[in-house]
Structures are given as structure tokens and as C-alpha cells.
Length: 441
Ligand code: XLS
Ligand code: NI
Ligand code: NI
Image (cartoon, rainbow, N blue to C red; front, side):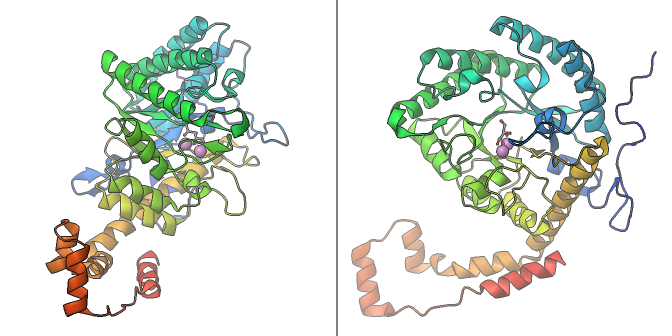
């Protein structure tokens, strides 16, 4: 048999060499085989590569075209190129030791002249992807449909004022669900990039939100019909490309899902850079979802604090990731979710090797954060502090408040007859920041 082409010649599968290594193409903290509580780190972290950035990203920005030219992007038949590109992708997933990948329907196969032709193109590439998944053991973390790039979606997909566009988007998601099922996808993501508006002068907000809900109900119904059991995920983002997006953040997502009776079917895919665009920390979004049992998956990246858009950089900020990991571990992990590197190379990082450096940095930072967070939890000092801070609710009238067994009249009597003035107690933020720093360094 002919040996398959090596798209990343000279780069061997990345190995764990430990914190002391000076090999830039080795893991320092991520040892996929290391065991914690009977599971390997690979099973705990469930890393995933985002196909759109790592294999469709060209480095283009609003001021200039792409800078990144991959050797495998050659030939005139877009379907043939799509298949070779996918092979390069799977070689990368294996070499970077990523157990999962994620894609949009339009990332992997070109659109045809009609929806039927587009679907046929997709089927051909999906068959190839299925074979590659089987050969490599790499699995699909989630699938999704691109409902934001094509001009037909310029005014939204499910929230488009034209029902014709809604119908087209429905047909597209129908197919994307079938394809995700075919590839054994463990989740399905809705990111509503153009589900929002630019101005209320031309927009019926109430109707658009109801249409979005109808769309999601149809997706739930169709998944049931075809036997897709993966977890549905909403990926909130406050803006970009649309000025006002309906899935602004986790809190507005919860309100939306509950308003329309969808909360049982959805969890959240939380993206670091989307959290910060909404004016929140990454950890805030995780805690908000976890508090209602709706933490689903993570799109792992970061923004640039000096830039006001989704720069989708690889995140190596161990402090931020440790805080996020603390909240994730406290919530019992991500279940069928994982850490998907929805992150891209800088426009100036044009070598195929840069894909490795980027992912190694991200994976090592998450692995280190995971270990530090576990140490913090095992030590128990932080959680003891918090537990103690709320201890007055553990018994007596505090417990009655939590159980709703008391009211204003009783509490008023209690204060006037017994308790008097509360004694303020320091929240000790600086002490706790120093405590955190001890684990980090
Ligand atoms: C864009 C989103 C997108 C989703 C998938 O900002 O992060 O990449 O993850 O549609
Ligand atoms: Ni994302
Ligand atoms: Ni994003």
C-alpha cells in the first residue's frame, strides 16, 4: 500500500517531556496518559481542534487578505481539495494528540449551486471524515451549521424577517444534524452570529425572538425523530458580527430558554472571549451556567484586553484558567463537553509548525490549570473560607431564610428584640488573592 502523504513532515506526534524540557515541540504539563481519579488527563480534558480556524483560517483581516498558504491547498476541484485538507486535519489532530475535532458544515465541504448539490458535496466529505475518524480514533465533539457567512443570512437565519430564509436555515440545520449523527457527534452547537439586529427601526424584536425559539424547538423535535442523542448547546456572544445578539451571555440565554420552554434541552458552550466581550469574566459565565446545571462545553480561547473584538487567541493565562477550572471541577466537569480550541493563529504566524506551538501552549496551560485547581480543592482552604462566610445560613433563622420558612414579620421581630445591629466582617479579598498566588507560583 502507498504510504499516505505526510502533510506535516518532520513533526512527530507531540510527546510529554515534563516541565524541565526545552523542546518547543513537547508538552510540559499535558501528559494525556496521566491518571487522576481513575481517568486519564485525556479523558478529563477532552481537547478538540476547531477545523474552521486551524484548517480554513487564512489570516485574512478587514485590512488585507490571507497570509497563510498551506501546501495541501492545491488543485482546482474544490471537493478534492476538501478531502486532502481533511487528511491534513486528521494528521494534525493525531500528532497534537487531540481526541476530538469540531466543524461547521461549510468548513468541510463547498457549497454547490443548489441546496441538493451542497448536500451531496457534504455527504461525500462526511464519508471521508467517517473513514478518517475510524482510522485515527479521533472523535467529533460537536457539529454545527454555518448560518452566518453566506449573504442569504445577512439579516439573520432563524431571526430573518423573511420566512424563506428561515426555511432555508431549517433545511441546512436538518442536514447538519444528520451529518453530526452520522459522525457520532457528542453535542450540537448553536452560535447565533447574525441572530440579532443592527437597528430597531427595521426590527420586530419580539417576533424575532419567538422565531428563534420556534427554530430551536424544531431542532429538538428533529433530533428526536432521527435518534440524535447528543447534547444541544447554545454559545452566547453579545455582539460581533451583529451589534445586538439575542444570546448576549449565559444569563440572558437562561432567560430566553426558560421563557420558551427550551431549558431542558440545552446547555451552554461558553467561550472565553465572548464572556469578556459581554463584560464578564470567563469564570463568571461558567459559574452562572453551573448554578442552574447548564454548563455544557468550553470554546477555549482569549481576547486581547486592548482590542474590542473576538480575536480568538490561544489562551496561556494560567491564573484565568485555574479560576475557570476551579468552577468547572466544582460543577462536576463538562460531561459530554470538552475544551475546543476555538482559537486561531495570528496573521503573522504562517508556518504549519505554528499550529503546533499554538495548541501545545493552550493544552499545557489547561493541563497545568487543571492540576493547580485540583490542588486548591484538595487543600480545601478556599472552600472552607467561603463555607465559613455563609455559615450563618446553616442553622437557625439563616436556615429558615434558605428554606423559606420565615418572613419579614418574624425577621423584623428578631432584629428588634434580639439581634440588633450586624457586625461587619472583612471579605479578605487581598488575603485570598495571596492565597491563590501561593498555588500558582
Ligand atoms: C464565533 C463563534 C463560532 C462558534 C461556532 O465567534 O465562536 O466560532 O464557536 O459557530
Ligand atoms: Ni466559539
Ligand atoms: Ni467566538
